[in-house]
Length: 186
Figure 1 (tube, helix red, strand yellow):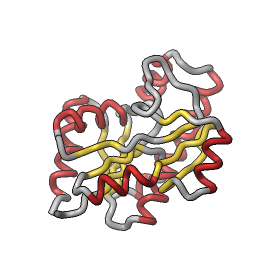
Figure 2 (figure 1 turned 90 degrees about the vertical axis):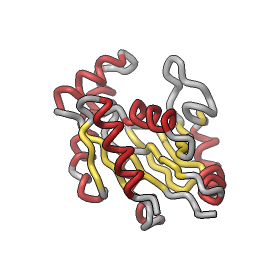
Figure 3 (figure 1 turned 135 degrees about the vertical axis):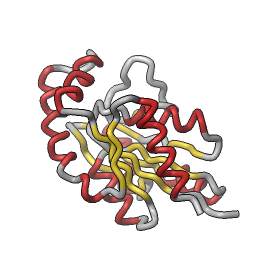
Figure 4 (figure 1 turned 180 degrees about the vertical axis):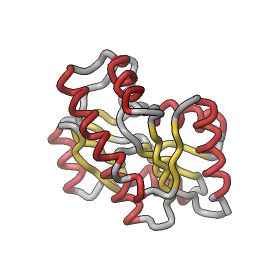
């Protein structure tokens, strides 16, 4: 049995990474998304263990100290990380794994796993990104401004990724990411 492959999908907060990933995993039985851990509070409708593993900062730091993450980083005041064991288990069972993570963590993963393919999701424009963030109606004005500032930095890191896809029409973005994954399978 062939080992699975890692695909790192990153992009600014609000760009639609989660929507693209959800469409991909619904369409392909042999692709799974890694569930990340975070210290941020759940948004409406998010489920612990399914959307994220919601941890206290103390729990997160303990897991990091015990080498329980493939990568971890602080992003906009919250910690995010990819639990190691579930990813390794999927790869060993020949399942391709999508890590939907922020840029700092994505670069860490691609450094540790040179065979991983990085896919950067771009917004059609900064104005559309701001509109998406505001449309969530889940964050303060300060948090939105912090996310937009972080987005500008993240966009400067696109050269560290193998591919980029503009999330304009959703169906096209999903098809583009699926094509990249299919093209990179042996």
